Amino acid sequence: MSKVISYLKSKDADLLFFFNQKMQKNFLDTFMKVITQFGSLAFALGFPMILIITPNEQLRMLGLHLALGLFISSVLVFSIKVMIKRPRPFESFEDIKTLFIPKDKNSFPSGHTSAAITMSMIVSQSISLALSSVVIGLSVLVGISRMYLGVHYPSDVIFGGTVALVTVSVIVPIFI
Image 1 (cartoon, one colour):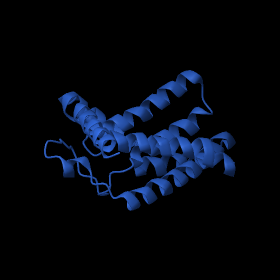
Image 2 (cartoon, one colour):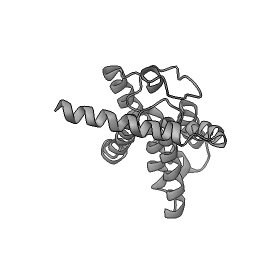
Image 3 (cartoon, rainbow, N blue to C red):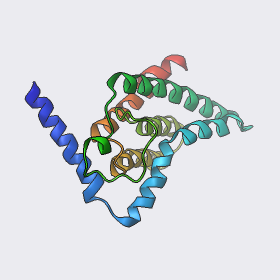
């Protein structure tokens, strides 16, 4: 079993270094800093609140669904982070390039990725297929940005996305 874990850890690190170092380009630095904001706490709080206060009933309901999904996925992510306490990649590897240091010291799972995918899945249920592709694509870019910026391992991002998928497909429908 330890060989399997060692292999997975090495592949996790290899993929991290691909996104964090081999993809590094000056023009991508600003782009990734902007993209990552679509999974930020400010966006995850602000976007649903704006929808909730609109006079349009459908948008208000969408805002409430977003708020519920984000609340549940955030509680799950926070609980897992507290239990696992995995250090961020830049704390474990000297070679990691990071463009900012997050306040949260725990890496696993990625809350930005979870929030972005939670929002994209919920929003996608009420928009066209073409627009859904764009919204979901942006949420995937949030996960990539987290690795590019050196603040998450690929496994953090994958598990953050998994929390979002479980939240939106299994847990949220129970409450709606």
